[in-house]
Length: 280
Image 1 (tube, rainbow, N blue to C red):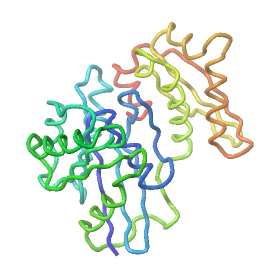
Image 2: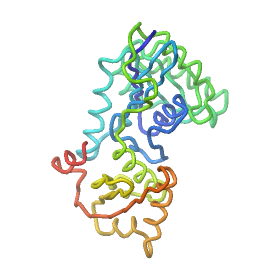
Image 3: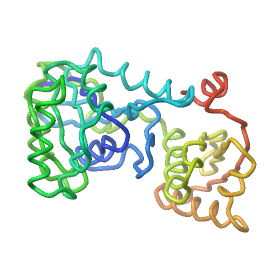
């Protein structure tokens, strides 16, 4: 049996979380079109009769503007060492830039370069991006065009990853797909829904945490940085909060009772104690 750890790295919005969900065949990490959706390491486990692969999804590496941004970068770059395989993701629909090169300089020379979003890029653009990746990125010795959204090219990528793993034991039980705690997952589902309906600076200013868990009653706190953001998150006559609650409950076991509360925690992204309290 082959087993090992694989890190997915890249700039924000290249599709790391979508790829992980596609590989596992179920949702283990939230996704959105907003940058920096992933804020912590999320592990997803693929178990087959011949292999167990532990994938590590990471925050997008970016130019930080807050202490939170610095912490996210540290989380992502810290996951590159001590793993068996590193997959560097780039976007097939966007030119390779300095940010991609910065990430590539920090991955091993034998990293697998994954050119994602082939479903929305023309075939000649995908080929051009593969050539650009080979010419402009320091790390990488194999290149895979994939669509994390449709699954095209993903099985071939997974087979290559497994072929690179050493022989070893299973690290997790066969039926375990992620090590994300239930309370953390519910808080992430709430944040995912808020990312879908808010814009401008609000998505970056939202944090969520479950403060009480007495099944079926779950109390989730939503933190924002300013009073104006609190009004946006609640919505007119509570419409936004109500819609978020309905969407999240639809993804929880029947009978779940979810209470949502919004609280202003001024400039939490820039305060070390606030970040530590939130687990960043």
